[in-house]
Image 1 (spheres, one colour):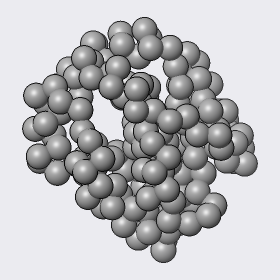
Image 2 (image 1 turned 90 degrees about the vertical axis):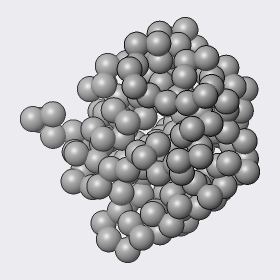
Image 3 (image 1 turned 90 degrees about the horizontal axis):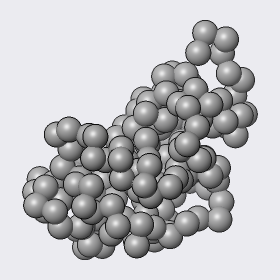
Length: 165
């Protein structure tokens, strides 16, 4: 099972993705950990990435998904803001897509509260400007609790919620 969690920075992709991965016993990958040093430096300086910057990173992530497909699967948290980016990640037809959505002000407050993250809150507007909302997959509103979001995601995936979660 391959699951990709998308959304602008600050929506909780890592939290939701790692909760799903823990529940399903799958590896979890945060796409942020796969950026080349040049991308991290650029974002650390407050500059948004362009398509050219993202292409090698997205190819690395697609390769990771392809390798994960050979085992039990994986959960990947990745902004994947444009449809063209999601097409690159679509290494098989039956990927489960979960798109996190929320109010800009809530996301802004979350980003301001983050410490030691290279993605600056000031770049949020560029993420919203780039975001191409997909018309497939689960659209998950981030105003819910992590537990509610996990339950909704598991329902979408066709997996019963364990009572110890």
